[in-house]
Every structure is written in structure tokens, then in C-alpha cells.
Image (cartoon, rainbow, N blue to C red):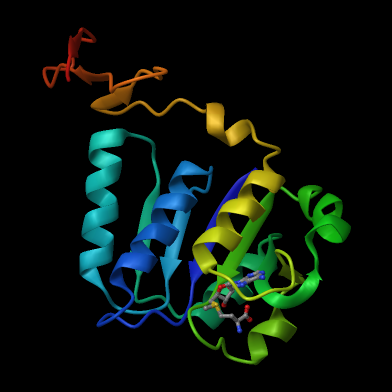
Length: 184
Ligand code: SAM
């Protein structure tokens, strides 16, 4: 399954942190790419830095023309899900959505352009209370992937060894000889 996250409404002067979190959740919860419908090289740089250190092939593109992206994604066989508190109940539409293998998930900031509601294949509420694009995206992706995304391995320079107490991080040798070094 290929999942792309589309982030709308980003205001560079105030949304850098939350948009970065949208990207971090997208990557960690199994999406392959985030498209940012605004220009913000800082967000791109900080997500690319995470990919470099923690692995995976997550990509970020900024300054995209979102209507064209939505149109092209649908024309090439993908489906578009817009997360909004006004949408259909997640539990009622998830099986239909999961039947597709290319899914674009759109999240907004404040108000999204009204035409997105008509362009999306589904407008979906993660509950019908206002909360956050970060929370909505995390819950949606977790339901979509049925929890399996949390056990995925990322091949990065850094790897956490899950431990009940304390921190254990393995740092792979930069020489790429496959020999892990113990970090703290
Ligand atoms: N009026 C907005 C709406 O349509 O959901 C709430 C704005 S909220 C600050 C920013 C983004 O969070 C929304 O564009 C939406 O993508 C997401 N969001 C917030 N609550 C949500 C919910 N209950 N279900 C799905 N998405 C939600």
C-alpha cells in the first residue's frame, strides 16, 4: 500500500513545528511521502535530517500545487481521503478505503479550501470533535495499517533497542561495514 500525506494551510511563520510533526507521524506510521502546499525549506530540511539519521525512504516535497497533485493522483488510480471533523465516521468507511493500494491523506491547518470536500473520495472524521491534524493522521494511519506499521524496521544510522527502562540506541558504523556501535 502506498500512502502520501498532503498538508494544506501551512503558515510558515507559525506552523513549522506542527507541520514537521505531521511529517514525522506520516513517516513513522508508514506513509512514503509528504506534500506540503506551501514553501518552507526549513520543514523539508528537518524531515530530511530525520530520514538521514533514522532511515527509511520517506520523501518531502514542498511548494506543491495541491489541486494538480490531487487530480493527478486520482487520474493515476489513487484515492483521496480528506480528514475533517465534519466527515463520515472512520469505522464506517475504513474497509472501503483499505481496499485501495494508493491513498492520499489530506490534512488542514485552520480552514481548508471548500473545493477539497468535493475533490476527495472520502471526507473522514476521526471522531466528530475538533482536535488536531497530528492526532487525526496518527489514528487514521494506525487504523489503515491495522497497527502493523509500528513494527516496521527502518534501516538508519540510529536504531533504538526497545527496553523497559532507560535508553538503548545502536549507532551503525558510518563506514557502512554493517557493524553496529553501542551508543548511549
Ligand atoms: N475545522 C477543522 C476541520 O475541518 O476538521 C478543524 C481544524 S483543525 C485545527 C486542523 C486539521 O486537523 C483539520 O483540517 C483536519 O485535517 C484535522 N482534524 C481536526 N479534528 C479532526 C477530526 N475530528 N477528524 C479528522 N480530522 C480532524
